[in-house]
Length: 122
Image (cartoon, rainbow, N blue to C red; front, top):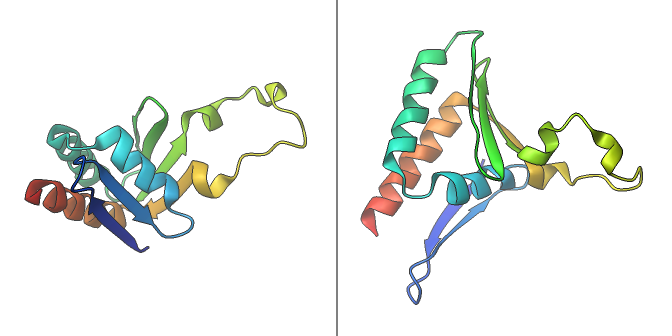
């Protein structure tokens, strides 16, 4: 998984670019975690507690949520958790690559450490 963090020098906004298949992870990091070091600490603590465990932990966000289970991290658009698929026409499907990302705990830890270092620096 490749990613890049940028900061706009004009308005101070942050931008993240993630490789194909991990776009939702980048969006989640920017929109749901941001510069909230408490959230980062909580996620890292949960990763440590859940390694080699069958338990599940969820962090619900406004648009995207994180699910930790079976040594994998799933970031998924909240609308994809809906069990009521009748509200969408059959021909309309979500572009899963932008609505869902899956990675291992180690990859998520690396991303969180890199993001923390980046936002701390700026």
